[in-house]
Amino acid sequence: MAFADLEKEILPVIVRDQIFKKEIRSLDVPFILNSTATHDTSLSYSSDGKAISPQKDLPKLPVKHEGRAWRQMRYNLMSVYKRLFFICLAANIIALVVFLVGKRRPTTLGLSPAPMATAVASNILAAFLIRQENVINSLYTICCWTPLWFPLRFRRMIAKLYHFGGVHSGCAVSATIWFMLLIVLITRDFVLGNFNQPAILTTAYVLLVLLVSICASAIPKFRNFSHNTFEAVHRFAGWTAVGLFWVLVILLSRMDSKALDSPSLGTILVKTPALWILVLITFFTILPWLRLRKVEAFPEVLSDHVVRIRFDYMRIGPMRGLRISTKPLKEWHTFASIPAPDGRSFSLIVSNAGDWTNEQIMQPANAYWVRGIPITGVLRMALVFRKVVIVTTGSGIGPVLSMLVSFPLPCRLLWSTRDPEVTYGEEIMHSVYKADPDAVIINTRASGYPDMVALTHGLYQQSRAEAVFCISNRTVTSKVIYEMESRGVPAYGPIFDS
Image (cartoon, rainbow, N blue to C red; front, side, top):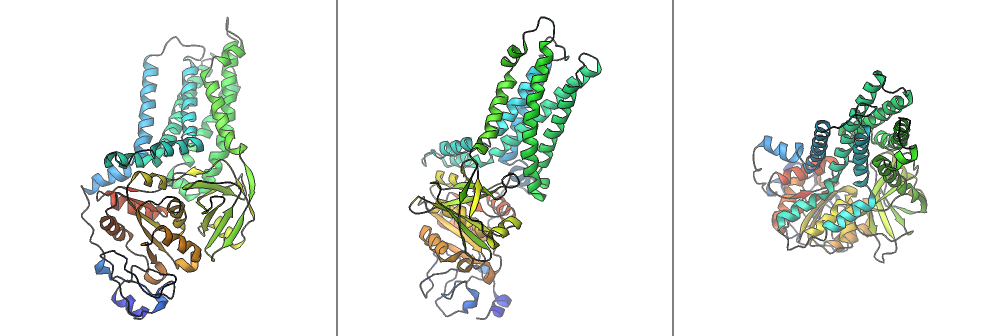
């Protein structure tokens, strides 16, 4: 059958490769048609044959649960990430109301700045900690101790751990709100002549601009439009804000020490909670950069679209993401690590997704900067389920292999990509089939883009899995997860919030 005929009559959906066999094996999926007849090999990513399925043979999707408005509210507007955000915000608003209603004797600033400064510092510390590598890895480790005999409903909820970014953003916005109130009080007292130190006012307003800039740059539309700008603002404005917060705390304490019968500046500082919280904030800000180093790399260009970069400077666990850079003060990129079978080295799969990644493919470097420690990724939560369906596209196979190579978790794998063997090489293909002999691989060059939702749901039902994990780009991940959840299927995937 010629390609032109296929285009007119049926839509090729599933393309399955057997690398060293001249035959088509059954995929054990009811809705896929298989044939041992001779086919036009131009449709396959190898010369070994293929399996195709007409569009009519795709599994029929069940009706979505609940009404459209409620689905949008539950799975988009009130996702777990946003619920955590609003919980943090609501807790701070309640604390603010309690503080204002129960305020005591005012000091020279009209209201004591100490509680507000403590609230600001506490929220900033919480925002830092929830993004700290050791904290993230510890949370994943603890949650993955969940026994498989626990109720599935509980395991489905705990698998949403990766939404912890909602705590980060909620605390950051709360810190900014607390600081705005502090600015109002400082400005009022300066205007009323209760103190005459322009340095305090200037430092406070510059710090406010930095905090607002950090929050504004993290708005999803802006962050997606210019991620490098988002990173630069977060990094440099964040460092400057921490420094200015130190200055502001010292200036306020110095002013209090000049009041009649006040203790010394040192005594006031030691008794200031915000100062000790700032010590922790500064420590966790510096910590990843104390681990900054340049390490040797061994790139292997697999195609004009993909490069595999190997490292042997450390042992690394599965399902960990490593941040690498060629310009450490400008931009960082995180990729999932794939441990080698001997455990002594690991590799990263980098595909062409922009200027930086394209440069690594065209002109691969022999050394990269790394900082911090590898961070556990969302696929780690697959371990709390007995069986899962893993859906991925393109270089998303990297994080998937990171898990499947190390953990023989019962799963079904659905991988959609362009010319898999040509693009990623035989070694990657061997690893895929070794991890899941029944892997369903779609060659999009031959078949076009398939209905990932229908295929995913079909595999979920056929395999009797407990959950679906999707590792892909933002569009595919969001669509698959929403379509699954709206049909009662627990689905998980990265939320692209950093």
